[in-house]
Each structure stands twice: as structure tokens, then as C-alpha cells.
Length: 260
View 1 (cartoon, rainbow, N blue to C red):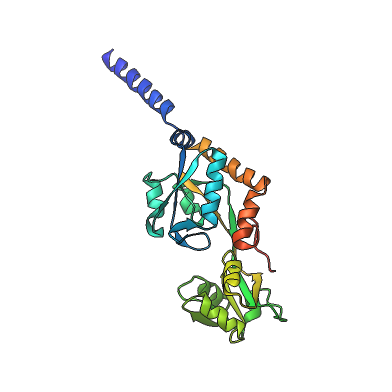
View 2 (spheres, rainbow, N blue to C red; view 1 turned 30 degrees about the vertical axis):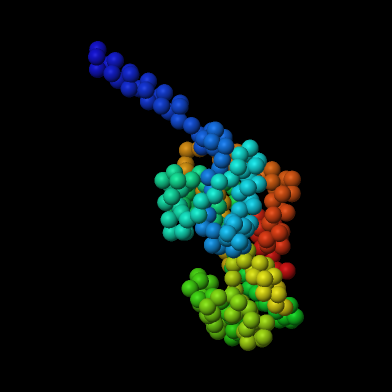
């Protein structure tokens, strides 16, 4: 009888603890802040300007928090530790262009995607040749940054004369001067870097697979997921998302890239 009572008591306690476990949305609302982690060194997504955080994801986080009725509270972390920090409960979400992958979905839940990107060519504004795919660059010179995965993408095609550079300023300068035929970077970064350099260049054709990025958070928070997805949808519906996106990228980054 005593064993039976103990089992019943344990079961009731377990049920009580389960019932009292707060969804992340309840925690955020009660606290009054949404704890957001980002690198703070990744322009134009998030970076520091005059000692203050700025960028697309900083503005988007503030707008999302406002839709939830709270304020965004930011923490910076190196990329290598940022997802481990999320899993350890150091913050509520990460907003740092986190790709939605099957592997990451084993550990985290994600919001609906808020950016869609792919590798994309950069060409001169007066370019008359029609580069629609990387195969069209066989026998041509393609510039890209050292250490990026774009080299592997281009090498897989074969026959492209790949030129690597320390960074985008160097290969964009060579492209503008006609020393290379095209350059390759992430579609989301191209409008920003082209605008920043003020060179006679433009985005070319998207040439790789699409990658969607979203907001990861700890699993088991269905109310929070519904709320964050609704907040993103509301920002889309009232034009706020497009306004923020156009400020930093000259287009709506929630839609697939296109050649301009």
C-alpha cells in the first residue's frame, strides 16, 4: 500500500511539474525582455557602429520584440559558441543568419524563415555577356574571397579560372577594372557591398541552391513559436519587414534572390 501511495504521489508530482513548466513565451512576457544573441561583427546583419549595435537583425529583433509587447535585450557571442549558449539557456533566441538545417532542427525549433539566399554573381553594370549559370563562366576569370565555400561551388563546375582575394574590396576593384569577368558572393551581401564600394557593378544571376535562415530557440515552446511566427507575419503584413530589409539590402530578403 505504501509503495502504491508513493507511486501515486510521484505521478501527481510529475504531472504538477509538467503543468507548471512555463512556455518560453510566458517567461519572456513576465520578464519584459526578449534575450537576443548575435555576433555583433557581421555587417550588414549585425555589427557595432560608434559603440552601438546596428544592422538588419538588430532592427528586426527590436521590431519583433515590440510585436511581442517586450523589449529586445542583446548579448554578443562568437559564432563558435552562440548555439551552445542558446542550448544552455543563456538567451532566448539567436538572430545571426542561422541556416535552417535538418541537423540543427534535431536540437532547436525554428521560426519561419526570414531570409532566403544563395550564391550569386556580381558583374559590371555595362556587362553585355549573358552569364546565367557558373557553366557560362568556363574559360573566364571568377573572383571570390579566400576561405569561402564559394570556391568549392565553382570548382565543381570545372573549367573556371578562379582567382581568390583577401576580401570583397579587392575582387570588386579588379572586376570594375575588367581584370576578372565576374565575382561570387552571398546574394544577401551583394547589394550592401556594391553600395558601399560605389563601383559600377550590379548583382548578376543566382547560381546555387537556396538557403533559408530563421530564429532558433529551445525545443518544447509551442506558444513561443506561434507568437514569433505571428510577429514575423505581422511585420510582413504591415510593411515593416520590407522597410527594414530595403534599408539594408535594397530588397525584401525574405524572397529568393533574382538578377537585377
